[in-house]
Length: 403
Image 1 (spheres, rainbow, N blue to C red):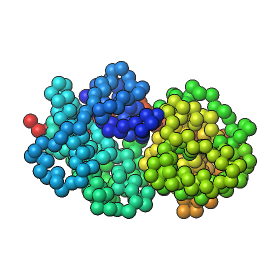
Image 2 (image 1 turned 60 degrees about the vertical axis):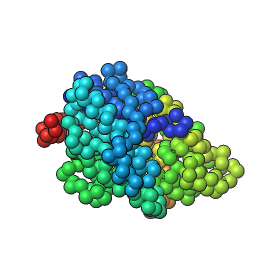
Image 3 (image 1 turned 180 degrees about the vertical axis):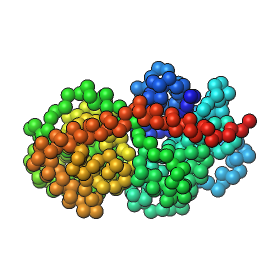
Image 4 (image 1 turned 60 degrees about the horizontal axis):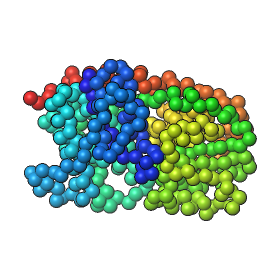
């Protein structure tokens, strides 16, 4: 098959890290390429993918001003939306140009930033939307006030999603949210897990369970959806469990509300406890891999997640995991088998879970082993890639291109 994966994510402002869409895209492209398929990755101009096989073709698409026939209608949109439509238009032109050179079979696009807005028919190839987390969900769980601007943005993404020929999704929880919010029938969204390669974690020697200190790790943006408010409320009780506990927060923590949460956490701590809490900010991928392997407990207190790569990374690093009973987390973590779950509406359960792992080191070690086995067995990239290829072939059977 001739497959195109689109990654619209720029790296973070620091250039140190990439988001889940980029991680998924590069992992999926490598796996499909290993199976002998022709694979292209299209990225926004200025993005340089890392760790891509040499036989994967990487090309850039750029913002193109909308044609006059389309621009007239854009007066109803705000500047942000018009700008992203320009990227979508640029993507459409790039795809058609590529199709002329070598016929494309499938184009997979994330729902991110309404990228599929200009990919309405007629097109000679099917557009598959791969859901990650639409902005309407992010804003809802972040408690954002829905202004006219945000409402227009949500409608923009919704219209782009409707241009897809078929849909896929990495978790049942996200699928349910998508069906409810966009009125898409359940049988039109296929559930396929995210691929994940444990190899980078297998080569790093693990520190073991609680040697001289107890390092609790949180990875992600410090925002409400990711459990920032829970961390703020419970960080002092967690630190009081044992003087050997240290807490590391890796991820953006200074922009907008993230800075507010960071300041609130720092103000709540005594001078002594401030020395036990570390804010690393955006972290390079290779440094983050080592950080997982040199930590003791992973905490993911999110109010909603799809199938987060931070969780898969922690499991691959052999960490005992404590997660919230929300979103796609319980689909990966089974309470008492490969980790512990807590109710974010009763956040003190998080403190009790950490205490349980500290007191029962053998149990913590068992959870860690089982978590690694889970991600190894259910997220193998080559197995997921074959599932995806079979899915693509089934979709192509139903597709009727324009001539």
